Length: 139
Image 1 (cartoon, rainbow, N blue to C red):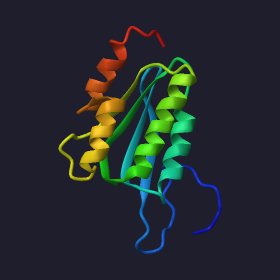
Image 2 (image 1 turned 90 degrees about the vertical axis):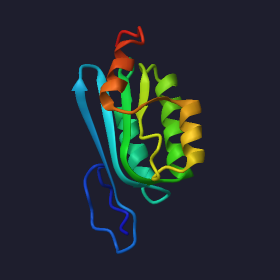
Image 3 (image 1 turned 45 degrees about the vertical axis):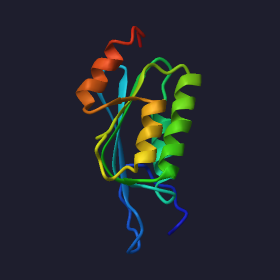
Image 4 (image 1 turned 60 degrees about the vertical axis):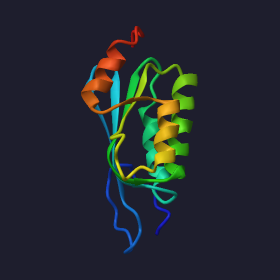
């Protein structure tokens, strides 16, 4: 793989057997950023996810991280999410919600337990939006 910079969300050619991830940032609601992740989150794909989450950081804004299309996640993904949570809190971010399928075979049980202990989890983006709106934090 080359060392050329690239944007999270853009696909680049990968050699056979290398994991692919797509990360997209959208603003479906005022002052709320949605980071939608598709594919595998592991050591190879954690850096573009981290880059996107850094770009999503905005003081006072809510953040929804949608993991519902993740096909596999290991501890590297969990680490990136925990760092993003810390950065969001210390940077003055609003509410942070994560969308997952709690019965997903793509995310190991230990990671789901850790996510439940560390994040406000929801089954849909709509539920996450409602949680952001009901926090009492005015973005």
